[in-house]
Every structure is written in structure tokens, then in C-alpha cells.
Image: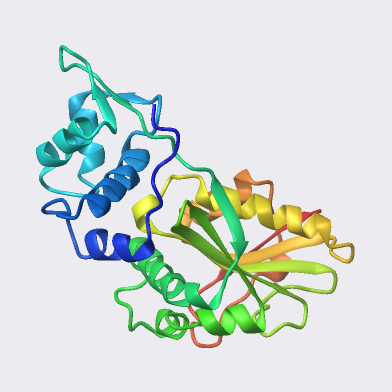
Length: 261
């Protein structure tokens, strides 16, 4: 079993996975091996199994030529194929999710995944839509005026979130003694990876760590079902006193949530 994927740089991801479906593997051996590692732990991490139709379905998130990519994963030792061809077993260990403070070098990737996550969810028709346009270049300001974290597996950024306290520039609903989080986003390419849940749990732990904080709060669009479900599953309760409507969007109701820490 491969114990851990090779280091994969963000430039590699951008070059080969950020321009539409993968048509062919990189020519350079190091790039090819790193890319196969990255794909392997996402579609079939070590110890998990899948039949061929199921594996093809997972691979369609990366390429239309699933046969090409499936063969490459087997030939390069990332996936093991049963002799009768009935089952495939993953061999690449998926790295743990780590969360750290954002750095200046993260700004461009945070902006990219923020826009991508909102567009993928269908919240806005395009990147030039009002609020989305304003936040599409906000990573630097959020990092310097508040506090932004990123979640990663290896060197692959999976998601980000911004934290603010009462009176801060980026605080919308936080009162005294409350920690608010905003703009929690996960890259659409790694949805259902546990990234959102990991970020929420880290925020709750941070709230408990700060002696002056007794509650974590947030607000989210009432129509964003996945986000509402995530927060309820983490133990947040509806906090109607913090419901609000942005001046620029009188038709929009943002639901308040809170959890005592």
C-alpha cells in the first residue's frame, strides 16, 4: 500500500485539473505520478472498493475518457484490479485534512474557490453578480482585516472560512462575546469530502479556546439547503433574533444560527 501521496503543488492542479476535463496525462513523469496520486485518493482512497461502473462514475469528475484514466491508475499502482475485473481497490492513503491560518500566497486560490463554490451551488448566475463580484477579490482584505483559515489535504486547498468578532469589519451578526464565521466555502471538486464539517468543528474549538467567547454565530441564506443542514448537524440552533436582510437585497433573508461554547 502506498502510505502517502507525493506532494502535489497547486500549480500542478491548476495546469491539469483547472481547465476542463482531463484529456491526457502529463508527459513529465513527476507531474504524471503526482497527478495520479491526487486523483487516486479522491476517487478511491486506500482500502475502499468499487466495481467498474462505480469507479467510472467517480472518474467522470476528472475526465470523459474514464477508460484511459482507470487503466493509468491500475498500471501505475494507484488502484488494484481484481483478476476477474469485478472489483477495484484503492491503494493511496488519503491525507488528513489540516486547517491553518491563510497566508498572502493563498489569496488567489481562496478567491478562486470562493467564486467556484457559489457558482457551482447555483447561488448566482455568474461571477459578475452583485455580492459575488464584491467577494471575488476579497481574500486579502479578509485575511488582514479579520482572520481567514484554509483547509488542505496535502498541498491541495479544499476550502476556506473567515472569522470575526463583535465590532470587526467583517462581522455581520456577532454580538459581544460571540465569534462569527462567514464565507465558509468548499471547492466544488472536493464536495462531500468532510471539509465543511472539519472547518465548523475547528471554529467551535477556537471559540472554546478564547476565554471571552461564549457563543459561535453565523448567518446564511435560507434557501441554501446544504449549508443549513451542515450547521444543524453540527449542533447550531436557529437564532431568529439575528435574522437579517442586506440593504442591497431586500428580497433576501439570511437566517441566524448560534451554538454556545
